[in-house]
Amino acid sequence: MRRGFSLVELTLVLALVGTMMALATPRLWAWRDQWAVERATRDLLVFYDVARYRAIMTSRRLRLEFSSDSLRLIEEGPPERPVLAWAGPTQHGVQLVASRRHIAIGPTGIGWGGANTKIVLRRGAAGDSLTTSRLGRLKRW
Image (cartoon, rainbow, N blue to C red; front, side, top):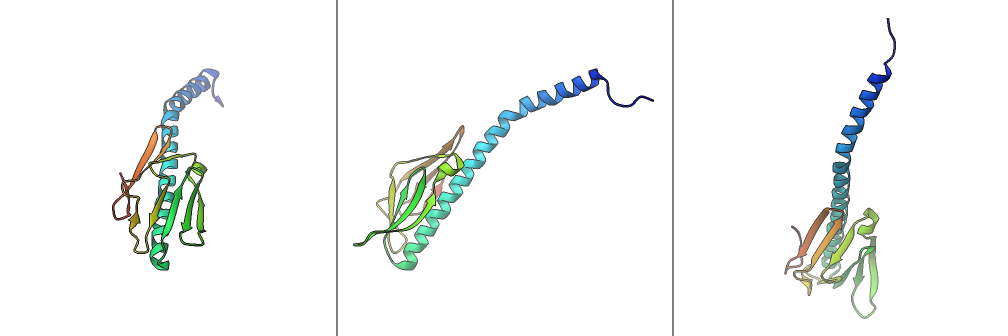
């Protein structure tokens, strides 16, 4: 009775596993990029909703400032003061490009001067696009 494997059998199995990994690796990287863009998009959507509801609840005009490294919410008025700051999409390795770097939200939740602002999130071959409507809602395309 023979125990173990021969060198030929081990070589064939390792060659087969190596070939399968070589074929699967590019797809894994693409999925990883897509997951990172998805997380960054979700973070941006949640931040926008929090800002919109805060403007409604406090009856104040607020300004959202977008950049790759931070998302900031600032209360407008004579004493302009920061209200909320979150880490930007770069925490996920995602690049943010926006047609406007800030959007104002009025006390009724309607956007001011931010209609058709386009925000593009990209990492590798994966990307996502968000656009603000005339009413100040953030739509995902």
